[in-house]
Amino acid sequence: MWDAFINALTLFIKGKLFRDFNAVVKQTLIGNAVGAVLLIVLAKVGLPLYVVVPLVGIVAGALQPWLFKDLKYA
Image (cartoon, rainbow, N blue to C red; front, top):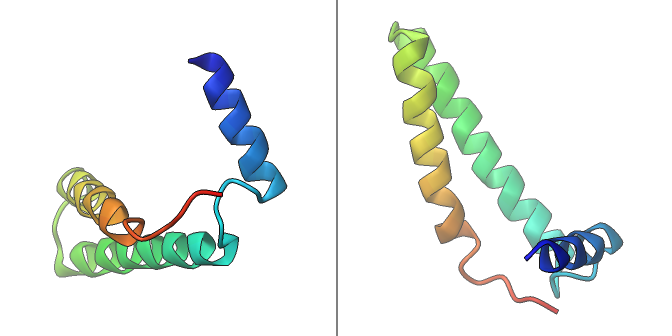
């Protein structure tokens, strides 16, 4: 298991894990931006941070598989 992790990490750092590394970066930035905007909006609405942070984490985490569904590995 550890060897698989190290192998994937090495390929990711070299930029060879995914066929289109730019798509990975783009999708990651989209997910982070959605999470950041949602965090700011919900905090400005007046919700306490102990409610906002887990909620944004759940939404952003649930968004990642949808964003990454079409990415292809090399």
